[in-house]
Length: 190
Image (cartoon, rainbow, N blue to C red; front, side, top):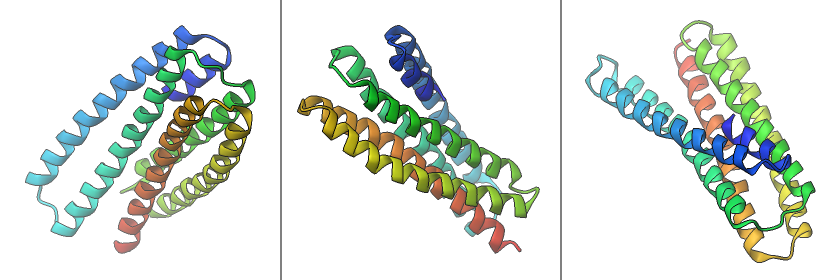
């Protein structure tokens, strides 16, 4: 959500607001790393079956990778802001649309996590929704690449925008992976 706020601020030419949102994004990513370490410590000493423990460790890692890739996207956005390269408005609009969908994908994953252990059918439904949104992001990803390459001849801009775009796309891929792990765990327990 902080990445989405940062892009929204850039679109409104509020670079200081964007930097503030990116600062909050970096803090949240650090918090996610702390949670990951704590969960791994708990899983190591827990009383779960080895297969369940392994599945949960994979889930925790995928969820941390979502935050890691959002941070990668944010770092690239910060560079773009700081070096003040011109980026056409239509490119920012496309990036904003992708990021909105990444937020939706993460929210759908959060609903999947919330349903885990309570409602297997809801886990499956939300997992499918996460997968659907990730496919939308894949389509937007290629459309945005085309727009970005057509809109600027400056290779520095294209490189940074591509890395920014990759960060958002990879974050959505890991949302999908995490949702898939939850689905498999639920289906295995039926």
